[in-house]
Image (cartoon, rainbow, N blue to C red; front, side, top):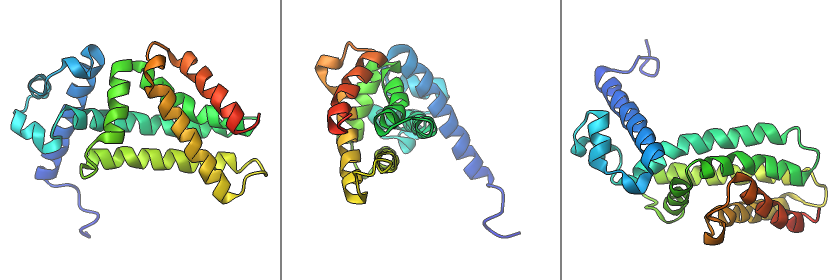
Length: 200
């Protein structure tokens, strides 16, 4: 049996089990109370681990939120990619890609705003932050492919337009004046901007 095909050892299994408990505990507490009203001690207690052990997986609540939300946002991006396939034009394809992300962001608006802040301003040396940045990069790659359906945009221009769409998405979700808006309100704001960007 090769090293690569060996099942994980007890130590690796224990680490994964602890990580799974931490994610489950943080997910439940953040969803119920919001990230600002949950302490790391509460998460550690619910996960049945010590706070010292918790900090081996994430140094603070922001990193814990990234750990929890990255998988959710990554899955949302994949849903958007699939939904864009059936879209009749580039504008609708772009909106299909971003809608599941907006839905994640507005599932708990306070957590969504904190996630964006951590994603943009968090410590780039932290692995969970790196994973969040990878989601941004992947979203721009998917948007670039969608924009290239329009023959007016070459590869370089499509990448630039994708970056603009990504910026509109983040701005619309994060700007204070949109804080009270639900999914549909944010999507209407994004549509208005993208209709101008894409001349549709």
